[in-house]
Image (cartoon, rainbow, N blue to C red; front, side):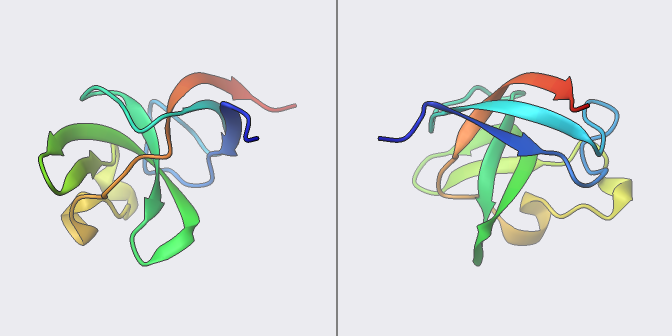
Length: 98
């Protein structure tokens, strides 16, 4: 049985100012989200790598278009890899660790 919640550490600046490196996120496992929500997805082609991005829109038959809040940070998002087929979850809480 998998827990419905998991946590993720923010490692890069792609979601500033909403999220900063060192922030921790509590994530609800779900494949559903609304546009504008911060979500977790797997990087296409690198299934062991998680992405923290903003859900922009659901594209029927293709998946979610995801965006970085801070593209100037050299972030990769759907502009680089296209829509992701599924989400891993949506962020329900942000906190600083330690």
